[in-house]
Length: 251
Image (tube, rainbow, N blue to C red; front, side, top):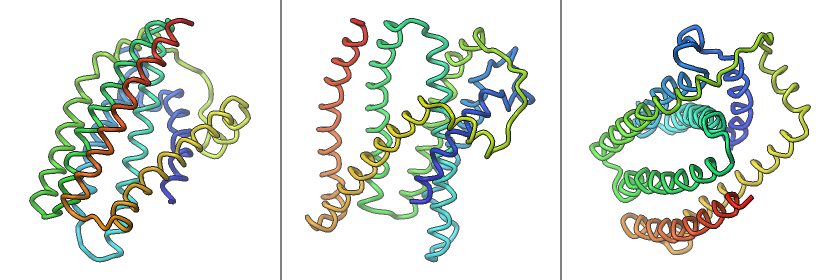
């Protein structure tokens, strides 16, 4: 609950930091551009957090809750930061609407495949959360995130030709929030994101609630039902992505 409210605030501040090229001290813009540094640095941090979330240092209730909270905050920060950098880099690399619509279609396919692969370790842990399986899941996420993330670095660096430096004086955290909230379009986007977040949160939690407490499913049976729901979701999203891509191309 708390992380859900921290995420949009973190996204706002992350966007401001990227606009100000806050990592240019360690990753010179002339060599790295403005977006690739955020991929490289946060990809490593995301890989560590994604692996650590399954390996709490103790089993007490307080430690488990605190560990989940801290790793979740890091995960949300890294994912939102990399998503912002990705969307910005895509706009800079692919200047035309036809190009972006084609890229969006393939991104949808890649996202669906990634969600499927990412769900596999979780489904195993829902059936059996033994230490060896948690270690295997953590290793899987660490290697997959780091490997596939670093592979994208050359593409992200194509945006460096369009990087623009700014002489704007960096704002503090609260000042950044106040300044950004003055933009009407941004407030509308925040409302849409709020609706999307509510929808995604309700749908995912309702699914687990229904399978666990209504159908009384546990272990492998519950994991199997989640797989079936995921397949149905993918079969619905892919045709929708094709239709939307064609609509954008026609405009």
